[in-house]
Each structure stands twice: as structure tokens, then as C-alpha cells.
Image (tube, rainbow, N blue to C red; front, top):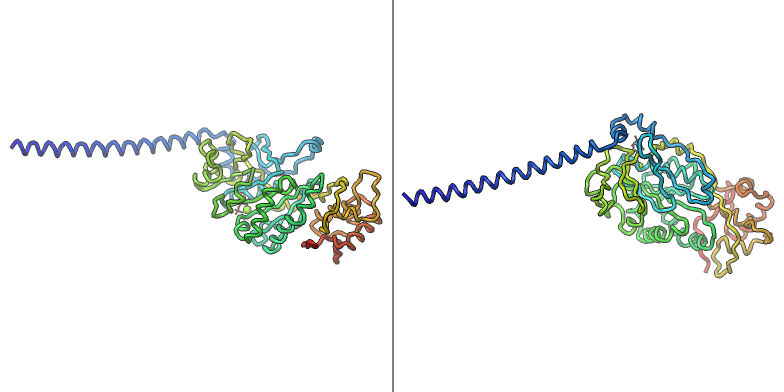
Length: 405
Ligand SMILES: Nc1ncnc2c1ncn2[C@@H]1O[C@H](COP(=O)(O)OP(=O)(O)OP(=O)(O)O)[C@@H](O)[C@H]1O
Ligand SMILES: [Mg+2]
């Protein structure tokens, strides 16, 4: 009898202990769930009124409110590097600006507004006299369509690879000798492009990104995700500015911002296309911004200027037979060296480098502000040197100038 009672007591003990543990586990789970939903609700109520409005307004209204318009040129931009307004802090809030002279990645899931923000940046660069743009196609022509009227567009992968190689081997040494270098920006609005490049072209791109900032060459890319599977790791970390649009998961935020994700850099918490977090190393606080909306038509119809930087004459001894603007300056026959104005040949070369299409003598004279006779003489000397070629539409720089040994 005593034994049975003892057995029952043991069973009762284990049963009660099991029930107690079960209850504790369920309670803990319930509490976490409640804390999570409270945090989410807190997040939502903590959003400023403009963000709540931005989230709930119809697309057409938001696009109208956030419509991009050209950024005026200020006189202080002559002395201080300008910054580009890409977003606003609220529907009617102050501008959010980024430094354009760096590698910029616009990251976000499909339809989150990357292309729009790249168009805003591109429209700004196209209107500057010291910036030139080259658009690299990664979407069978769709993403570069509005650029065609304004700048050089490279559609073909082979052409893109040849351009990258030419940039590193021919243009970089020439840029290295210039005192004021025109900025060149490569716009690649698709991560597919980075994955399709051959190993040699990828190495060129890495060189461009590593050394390009000082030489005035920048890459602005639109990337659907920031994982190594989409963007090669060699170039991922070289983007010094990140415009993070809506991404699907918290893990994506972690990939984009690493430790900063814990400090509130969470693009997965954004709520609609056009919202973004603008990160540059000096920005400490994650703040939701609303991207400006630049449609394809707006970019296609944007004001465009030929990039024309006057390069002051710098006398560099000719060391090889590589044709660079400095070499040609030494060889150009009719140059006067009594004033500080750069030689006509330099101006002609810069105008041809920056023009998306071949230019005739008159167009070159207009672009350089020189007399047609001087341009004619310079262009003839350059053509005799093989630095420019004549086509049916005018003069142009041969795409793949080979180095003579
Ligand atoms: N700044 C913005 N304000 C309001 N709506 C926007 C903004 N940017 C984009 N959108 C909306 O999102 C849609 C998609 O924009 P966009 O083409 O820029 O996205 P995306 O990220 O480039 O997409 P994909 O990855 O497919 O190329 C636009 O048609 C527009 O309706
Ligand atoms: Mg796009």
C-alpha cells in the first residue's frame, strides 16, 4: 500500500514538473510575441507624419510631390565641390545631398526606386560642364534608353569590356598627367552586368574603382541585392555611398550595413518605393528619406552640356610613343606658348572625349570657343598623328587606340 502511494507520488511529481515546464515555455513564447508586436507598433507610431502620409498616398500623388527638377548652379560651386540632392527629409522637407565624386550604389529590391535615383544623379552630371557620363547597359537597352540622347551608351558586353580596358590602359595614364581632370561617371543600373564580365574585365573594373576616385572616374551602380552572389565581393566594399531602398528581409539589411543594422540602418523596414536610407561614412543617424522622382522622359529631356574642361599646359617629357594629350601638345605645330590658355589640340581632344557622337569642325569650334581655322589646323595635325579619325559624321577619337611599342 505504502509502495503504491509512493509510486503515485513520484508520478504526480514528474507530471506536475512537466506541466510547469510546458507552461513556462508557452508563457515565454507568448511574451516574446507580444514584445515583438509592441515593438513593431511602436515603430509604426514613431514614424513621423510625413512618412505615414508618404506611405499611404497614391503613387501618382507621391511622384508629383517628389518630382525632380534641375538643381541650379551656385556661384560657390566654383570653389566648393557641389553635392547632389537625391532625396528630401519629408514630403516638403529639406534636401538630402550626396557627394557625387565617389562610387555610389543604389540598392533595393525590384521596383524600389533605384533607377529613379540614378537618373537624378545622371541628370545632374549631364548638366555640369566638367562631368561626362557613360551608360553601361545591363537590361537589353531598357535602362539606358533615356541616356542615348545625351551621352555614350555601351550596349554590348564586348564593347563594355574593351571600354574598361581602354580606360585603364590608355585614359588613366593621360588623366594622371592632367592637372584638372574632367569627372567621368560610369552608370551601371544592373548587377547582372557585374556577373557577366570576364575575369580580366572585372580586374579592370576593380582597378577603376580602386584608383578612379583620384583620377576623377566614378561608378554609380543600381544593385538588386548586395550579396556576394549578385555583386563580386572585390567591388562591393568599394562603394563609399549606399542609397538603400526597400529590401525584403532583415538579413539583406545586415548584408548592406553590417554592424550598423543594429543601430537602425534597416532598409527592410521601409514601406514603399521611393523611400530610402542614405549612407555615407560621415552620416551617423539612419533617417528615412524620400527619393526624388525623375521619370525617363524627364531625363531624356534634361538639359545637357558638353563637358569641356580647360586643361592648363603642363610640360611633361615624352617618354613613350603612347598618344596622350600631353604628347600631342608637344607635337602640335601651331601652338603659341606665350599665354596660359591650353593648346587648341587639347581642347579639341577634350571635346571629342566628352562628346557622345562625332563632331565636325564647326561643332568643335563652338564647343572649344576657338576659331574654325585654328580647330581645322589642330584637327588635321591630330588626324595625321592618328589621335583622331575622320568619319562620315565628323571627327572622333578611335575607340581602341593601341599602344605602339
Ligand atoms: N522617388 C520615388 N517616388 C515615388 N515613387 C517612386 C520613386 N521612385 C520609384 N517610384 C515608383 O517605383 C516604380 C519603380 O521605380 P524604378 O524603376 O526606379 O525601380 P527599380 O528599383 O529601378 O526597379 P528594377 O529593379 O525593376 O529596375 C516607379 O515606376 C514609380 O512608380
Ligand atoms: Mg531599375
